[in-house]
Image 1 (cartoon, rainbow, N blue to C red):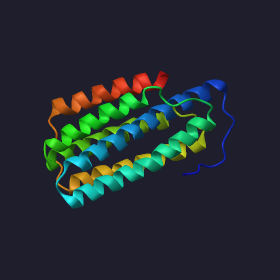
Image 2: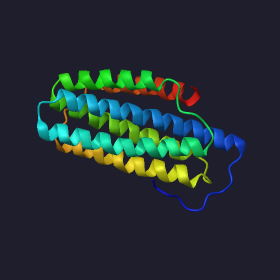
Image 3: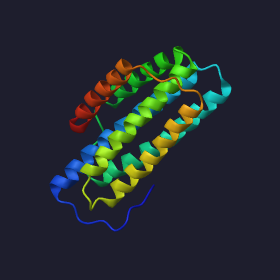
Length: 180
């Protein structure tokens, strides 16, 4: 797990907010695993399938890191995790069925949106929570690498309405997961 520098003590309010942000990130990693697994199952290209499964494996690391931070911050995982996984798996199957260029476009756009989301979390995490900040920074770097890989592998550029719909779905997920 990525390690931050020396941590400062957190107030109860800071600990609760950091915990809620890490819960949202944990849900994001559950969704990423579901998306990549479904997309890997949908492709007929064995090289692409292998790369998607490798990306899912990296998301497993992220899942463990966010789980560890949730526990350290004394909060809970989202109670809706099975719902998040099922929904993301369905979206991954749909993206995969549209064909590899569109599936890769979905990966690229998802990861670009996740990068922006993680930037927002870095601005909201308490400065003293160096452990959570280190996890989020490493996740952001990994997600950027996934987006670059998808783009270099022939990702189709998604139309504006699809991107907007993805942002709306992400906003609903992050708002609900922040609390539940």
